[in-house]
Image (cartoon, helix red, strand yellow):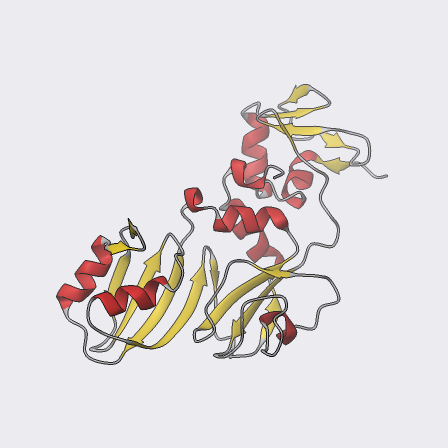
Length: 242
């Protein structure tokens, strides 16, 4: 098999971007067959060479990783299958078995990521990695500054306390909120606690991926640049094999 530059192989394996791979190599954090490598021109044979980052073995990348963004309509369940209801994977024409990254409740709309890359699932969903999720919310009645402040500061919920959030007013009944956690129906519960009710809830961003102009029910593959930026946001611990 043809030799491949080490930083390119690290990127294809989901460890980091090529540029970050170069940094790891220069810092002496990458080893090939047990030997630390610091030369950026190093090439490896993906079939025979063993690569480790910070002492943790890196598995060879799959050639058929798929990364898809879909704008989930209301009434569609974020699941691979559920009898009697439409599920998000049915919106996508993809022969590869893919899974949603996290959940978006049935009554909400917006961005859902679908992939067969298990490391990405782990890296985006593990609570210790602090990846942001951004939502647009419309409520039934004008919402006060005090209510927005309570949601921003964190509030008791489900036996714990929500983490501080970035909350910004858009109009009298609309606001945007950025979370670094994902408790069950969290935003709806928060809004109820301040005496209001969610009318519409739409996710517009997950980590570095934005919904943009994608219409409800439509989907597309992430671009190579989007995948690279997304993987670059994952800490090293997130992409070690689990």
